[in-house]
Image 1 (cartoon, rainbow, N blue to C red):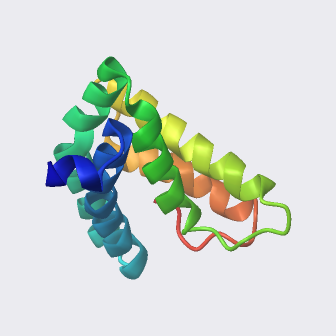
Image 2: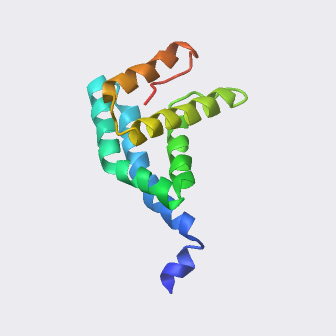
Image 3: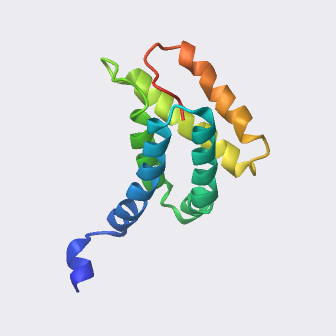
Length: 130
């Protein structure tokens, strides 16, 4: 019964399970300026969570993974006054990674990362796009 007293719903369990795992990888990416470290961390992320992301889509809990992913991506951007840029970029980065994953990772990871880097110049407040 203790389990049920600590969690009200399945969504809370899934969030609390995935959030620290995803946040750890994003923290490592944020803290390391070296491209090779960022590349390895992202490769590790998709090797570790690729199946979970696909499963979340099939099982209907993708909004939880999306929420965590977006929360972590937002940390890469300096806060803008109205939040539109951060919201736009967070949703866009997730959508790109999601498409890449569902397409079977056909493009090399470096190509996807280079594509995302193009947005650095669009807004001067990007720390380092994941």
